[in-house]
Length: 139
Image (cartoon, rainbow, N blue to C red):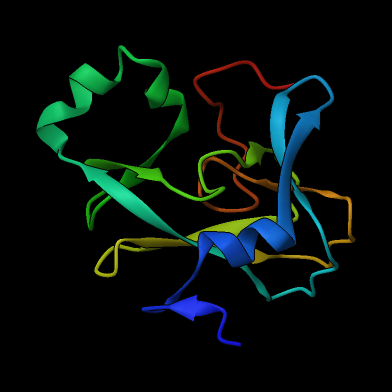
């Protein structure tokens, strides 16, 4: 059985490999439903691109907290579908994200082995080792 449709993993397949649950101190998060190896693609999520002209409108909404900077110059925003907008931030993440702007996809890739039941985290700054402050307080 194929696990991809037009180059990305279907939401149905991802749902068997991932789950959303409450994460201590941070609200909902994404958890592994199986083991992942370092370098393995966890999910390829399609995105809805929001033009730069709408940025100021989006900043005033709750959706702003779930967006990714997008586009060749990061001038746009994108909402990731599937589990993509629910991964929590960590300055020592076990996964990273890779924008695929032309395909309107964002890949989530394991940086380290991830065990079944473990929360999958990414660094919202983009680079896994970037310690720049975010727009919200981080424990």
